[in-house]
Image 1 (cartoon, rainbow, N blue to C red):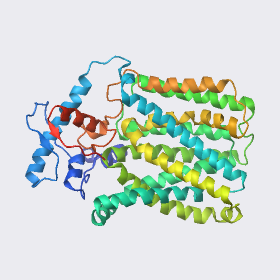
Image 2: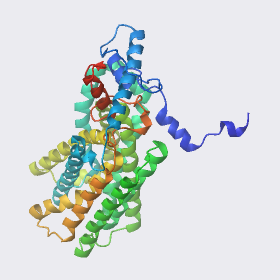
Image 3: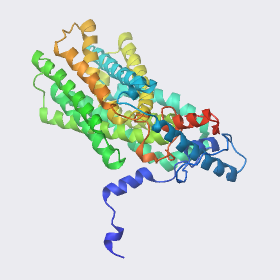
Image 4: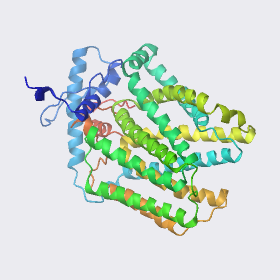
Length: 437
């Protein structure tokens, strides 16, 4: 055997990580149905069997149901994708408007958390790591409790032992993305930090292309470029008005922190999209809450101890912390659905309007004045979001290339192409049952 025959590139190794098995161990039979590793067959041959999704009485009947359901999903996908489409067809679907509105809702959430952080800073309370730990605690209380109730401690423990290290990496990247981005603003100016944040979009596109084999269409690339152009106008208007923060305390140090934070954000978004396409959303959020609480708690104890002692504590500060926690927890709860129905790339360009919404709030709360470039930039970003979906299929980005032709490696959850195909098959009496995660 030649050495070249067994050589594996680093990218192929990472791809193997995303394609590996052990996808549905520790789940009950209904959950195994949703996450089953189906065998790929040839072209669809219309089944006449109606499959009822139940707990099942034997592994043989369950395997048979898996096979027929896989064919039903394939048939549903073929029917959806065979629909005659025009360049504007996806815009006529409910999915498009949900995606567009969800993206702006998340952008408003980011603006709201930034506003609460400003309120806290005005009171002399600057505790970036400590104020976020409450969000992870709340996520744990909600999603960890529900996941334990659904799986039971024994099954949850098996998943923790088998896949816990993967979720730990996801949570670690998420916490560090938050921490280093906030830290960057202490040393560099706003303009520099926001320009570097564009790297998160680049990182998402590169990692998705290399590891998940996502192939971007020309209109998607054009849409991303238009959105970035709109963000450029926002930053230019800040520079013209002199609201970019001036010279930072240590520009190089701050820029490096911003670059590190943007990289962590980009990796987090891609990995989370991969996780929620294959796992129930509540499971992913339960582990993010659990590990995020531990990691962020340790960082807060180390780095925010002095700031915590010097912080101002009163009813208003506590109210701002509660508002920050509730909105950020809501943000974390909605992101997985957007990643399922759209993608990490669309999610990132949707957040570019946060500066515009921040200015609108600033006019009424902080007395800011709006520059004439702001409305133009906002419209440009929205146009970019629309262009992103030009000439796309009726499934948009919900059909993930790494899940297989029939999405057999994915979960039949809210927002997924697999669930849409199953619903299509259910209407035709090919498969029964209505379990989603």
